[in-house]
Image 1 (cartoon, rainbow, N blue to C red):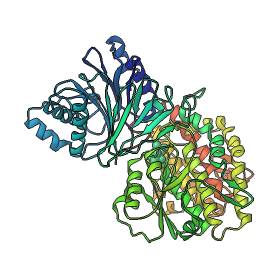
Image 2: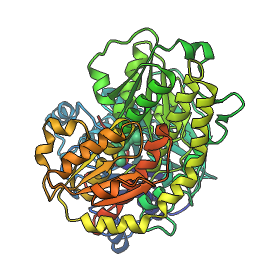
Image 3: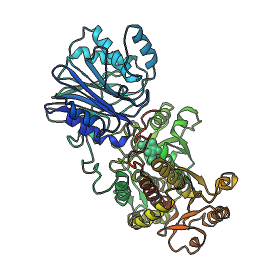
Image 4: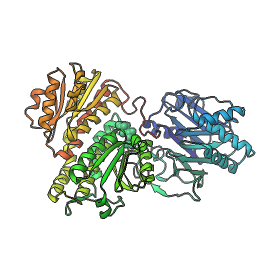
Length: 616
Ligand code: AGP
C-alpha cells in the first residue's frame, strides 16, 4: 500500500523524508517521490522503481534544500506505475503539492469539470485531480496565506467521494503543512519544534514516539511548533496523544536476511506476548481487559460472525473450530468484503469479531462499520495499537506481536491463533467447558514457545527440503479439521512470496474432482498430525500416492507409519489438537520462505502485494 511522510521543522526535510520512505518500503510500492519547499519554490523529485535505484540517486544528483517537505511511496491504483503518475502531484499553478493514499471514486467527474475550466493534467491519477481541485479553490480565495490553503483543502475534500490520507504543502506557506484523513490512516508525529505526518508509525519512530492518530474527516493544520485538528463532520475533533509501543530496533531487520525470517523466529516470543497476563489458572480461564462486555453480555451472545481477509481469514477458520468446540457457540466465518455487501441476516445477539494485523484493511474496516451500522457489537483482534479498526471497534484484544514488516504475515497469524484459543477458553468457561479441559489447553499454550523452538531448530532440514522442491510449478496443501485452515495458509504463504501456483484444500474434498490434477510433478504437502482426523487423512494421503503424487508430510514425532507413505516428513512435537494449527504452521512458513529464496524472489516485498490493503 502507498506510504506518506511529511516533515516541518528546523532540519533539512529531504534526508528525513528519504529515510522515512525507506522504512515504508515493506508496505509494497512501485515508485516514490518527494516535494521540498526551497526558496519559495517547490522542488519535486519523483521516480519509478525502488527508492535506492530511482528516487535517492535522483535527489543525490539534483539535491533539494528546505525544512518543509512531503514524500510518498506509490502502490498504483489509478494509472500505471511511471514517473508522471508518481506522487507528489502539483496543482495548475505548480505552487501546491499533494501526496495521497486512497481512492477518489468521483475523480473522473471532477477531472472533466476541471478540464472544461482549462486545467491540463500530466498524469492519469486521481490524486492529481485532487491537487488541481485544491489549487482551483486556493486561486478563488485570492491564492495566498495559511487560512486560504486550509480552507481550500477542506472545500476540496467536501467534494470528494472516496478515501484519502493526504498531506499538502504550498510555496506561499513555508511554515505550514496540512494533513487529512478519511478511510486511510494518517498520524501526526510530535517532536520538539518539529512535526511529522505519516501513514505508518514505522516511518517516524526513529524521531518520536508521541503521536496523534487522526480520525475520519479530521483536517490537521501543522506548523513546526504546533498543530490543530478540526473535523469536517463534527464540531470538534477528538485529539488524543498516544505513545508508540515499539522501538526503532523492533522494526529493524537485525541479523536476519529478511524481515519475514526474523518474524518467523520471533514467534516463541510472540506467543509469550499474546499470553502475557491473560492466563488465570486459578479460575481455569483466560482474562482480557478490553472486550468491554460484562460476563452477562458475553454469555448472552448466541452467534459470532468472524470477518477478515487473507491470512487473517485463515485464522478466522481456526477460530470457528476453536470457539464451536470449546464454547459450543455457533460461529460463521465470512470474507470481510462479502459480509459488507451480502446483507446476511444477523440475530439480535450476534456479535461480529474482526481479525486484522494492520487494523487498516479497508474490507475488514467496512465489515466492522456495517455490523455497527446494523446495531451489532463489533469486537476486534488487532496488532497495530491505535489503528483505525482498533479505535472503531466496541472492544477487543491486542496481539502485542510488535511491528510485522514482512508482507507475508507470519507472527501475526500465530499470535491471532493464540488469542483466539484464549478467547475460546474464556467463552467456554462461561458455558460448558470444564476447568480441567481449560487448564489442559492453557498448559498446552504455555508449552508452545519451547515447542516452536524445536521446530525452528529444523530450519536447515526444511531448507534442504525446499531446495529439493523449489522448481515445482504447482503445489497442493491438504489438511482436515483444525489443520485444514493451516493448509490454506501454507498455500497462501508459498504463492505470495515464491509466485508458485499453490492450492490449499480439504484433504477429504480432493477426491471430488481436484485429485485429477495430481501427477508426479505436483507435490502435495499433507498436514497430518496424530489428531482425531489422522486415520482419515492418511487414507486421503494414500489416494495421492496411488496417483504418483509426491508427498511431503507434516506429522507428529514418533509416528512410525508416515515415513512409509510420504517422500519427505517434517516432524512436530506431540501436541493437543486445539493448539495444533499454531505448531503446524511454522514448518510451512519456513518451507515457503526457503523456496522463495531459492527462486530468487523478493521475500519481504513480493510483486503486486501490499502489507496493508487500504483499498476495497
Ligand atoms: C498475508 O500474508 C497477506 N499479506 C494478506 O493476505 C493479509 O493477511 C491480508 O491483507 C489481511 O491483512 P490484515 O490482517 O492486516 O487485515
